[in-house]
Length: 193
Image (cartoon, one colour):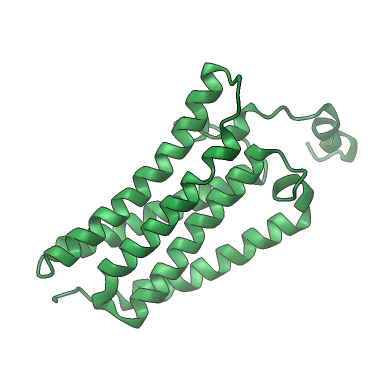
């Protein structure tokens, strides 16, 4: 196979992925009941799981690519498939009876965006294995890795409670959660607004 040399990129990506997964664990562990504990709202649990899935996908893909650069296709297929399974498992948590149309659309978009990214990862991996001499599939996989990082970082940012704006944020199930008056008043009480 004529895989371009992405060694420096994957070294940086693996280091960044490890750091980001570690920071996600710290963010969740600061207040586990809010984001990932059994009492946390299912929307928060789903966003935490989505962020974790994306960042773990990017980290392990980068590590696998460092082991063998010709293994890009296989790593993309395996990690994309596991990420699709993880995303599909969120359906049971997010879709409950009696959702409004807007809630249903948000949650469907949330799942669909993740499935699109991971589906492309599997597709690009298959194409890479099918056409090993075509370097464009290797580049497609590498550029898609950036989209996977973007997905994970966006979900983590939303999980932290940052202000959500834009089309991608509209698809977050967290947009439906109501911020309690106590949480809104806390910055005023400390004079940090």
